[in-house]
Length: 220
Image (tube, rainbow, N blue to C red; front, side):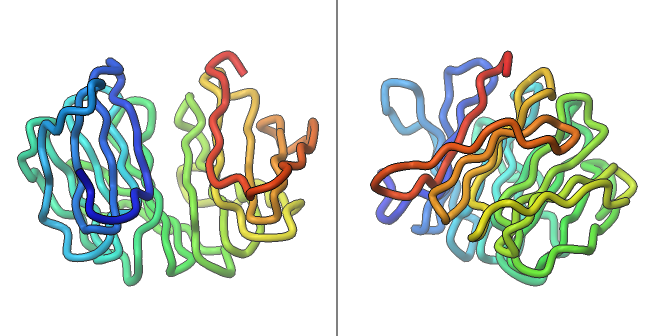
């Protein structure tokens, strides 16, 4: 298994494979019985995030080494995306798998066309970016940051909305498959539930340990 902390874990679209990213600098693929399928060892820094493409044919990984790597699900390195100047902490594919969004410690959101180099950069956050997510229709990108804000952008990089309710950095965000509901969790122990247009529906306060991850039901 991994030799250090695991920072991210995701299921493939079929639910048959799990990808994990670890501080031991490796990305690993597992079956649902816990058997190791492949160990991907090309990163030169801690692995922070993993994301399967919507068609399930490839995997993206983000690292402290400032790169994003694209892999086949058999473990072959397909491509390395270079353009970040600091740790890459979060990655996500758009719904049809043609664009990858990334964010990290340098405060900038980046979009990549997977058949071409870097597509565009979004500037506006005042601290590192912890999470990025596409809406299911692919029209908007939401980003959660150490600057305590949740920001909504269109694909051209125009800032559409800034939501600032957390009193500490946002550590995770989730978007329902119908795109109507979002949830954010912060280092302040608060979980906020939002509509896509930025209306705050409810606030939940965790008890005990702080919440570090969140998921939204597919139907919202």
